[in-house]
Image 1: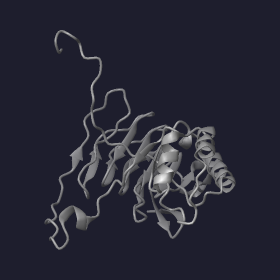
Image 2 (image 1 turned 90 degrees about the vertical axis):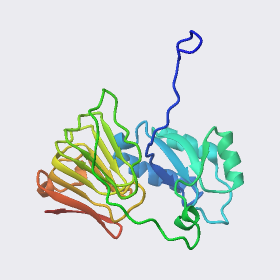
Image 3 (image 1 turned 180 degrees about the horizontal axis):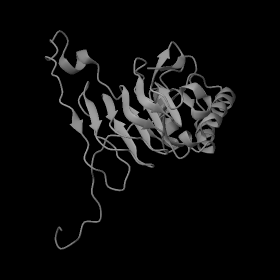
Image 4 (image 1 turned 180 degrees about the vertical axis):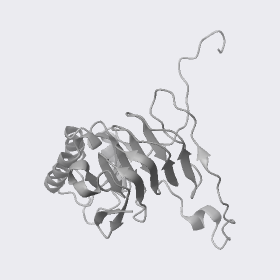
Length: 254
């Protein structure tokens, strides 16, 4: 209490992983058609989901992005456009006119962070990190050091969301339907996986998902995903590994 006044709010920092829509073309008719097909496969995955629009994949010759139409398209599919990254100053001004945040790059190149020619620090083997017991709110794990992993020794209930930023995620227990696992590295589930599991969230195509009992609603590696209807019946209820083979998402029994 400051000066006899009870604080009405707090400012805190937190780490969150947001889905990224990387725009490769300014033809919004094509974007609309392809996006509709994606959303139809997994509508619950996109509903009320904040997204970032990445403009870094646009050809330099394509300058104009119709942000009012693009934002309306995303909102029409239930998504909540949060901000943009990449692109030109013209893109940034147009995005700000639509009340979108302009985000910087999330990673600093190694040679800039350490100084050119400077030797990298000696690697350290991180100790496993155990998450505390949750309250009633979904979990959002703070970003651990690169190469670390998050270990959770309990079941994950419906409605809970686990984020493991910067490394692998291991769950010792069942993952209920309606729960969500997200990791930049691999995901290991030592129990039934009934919810959603998304590995390689930073674009890591080498990431894998391992589980003892596959009953998932959705599995994804680096943005390539399958919903439950597209998982063969012979692979459900068994121990599997899930990985990318080129652009194809493969599920194989262990």
